[in-house]
Image (tube, rainbow, N blue to C red; front, side, top):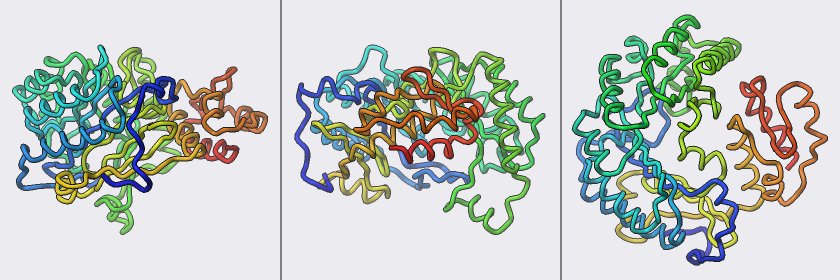
Length: 400
């Protein structure tokens, strides 16, 4: 186990009133392997020809134990298997991780256990196996309901395959979410509206709708730099797509509770809410990040991103690297993450984190422009402000 300072002592009962409990405690498991690398993806994912799943399961268990030594016996609100493509994990690998997590932490009665899946890597037997292992929520990467768009996005499945996978998931799990990407090449507003309406007819109570972003280090990023990625909407058209998305989803009863996430009331992602409300979460797996409160301090945790070195390090010193966060770091993270939520953030909590009072009178311009709304102790970015969220947050951050 690696640290940027002395190893903190394990948690004790004196931490029962720590701030992180407002958001809860989650566990993120990163599975780094995919069948192929999507051209828009900048996540830590790798294509491997062979994987010794027993070896990997053992490694996750070892890192779970090391992390639990720091946190103590906490109440665990959620577990999220992300990637990569976690639906490439064997069912006994998932089960072994869940069994050992339950030994180290106390599962909440309503614990949410999510597994990300790609339509091309799952079948009915796998879903039933994951469900038997303890998974109770699936997040399915449909990405588009148009075969040409799927090919342009580098996806390996067709629309029909995606819909069959969704139907199988819905027949096995009570909670199923799926992702779609918009502002794609040559996409029209009319086409996106029809796609949204079709998506709404599929019956899921949670949908994640992301605008396509061109990231450095991706295939799309390289094509864009060479002027070869044509037909992308400009900023103004992108804002129109966003507005259309909000209108259609709100009318259907799935308003956005976060910038890119829509749900019927009660179907929100509990795991992601931990991130957005500044809870604690343990990140385990290659490249996984976490936030842990140990004693009176909060730490940012990271792990070796490359799969082979990560696996090797689990057998010796472990992978966890920790950096102590100062008050301003914690306040800025709460601001950055919390203002993504429609509900916003609590000003008194922000000020307690920052160790100073926010000069609220200096927020007047943003309020007058309709970008911010202040209601007693709550600070929210309005629908008008959400397309400019980064700029709004930047102005507030200068006051901390």
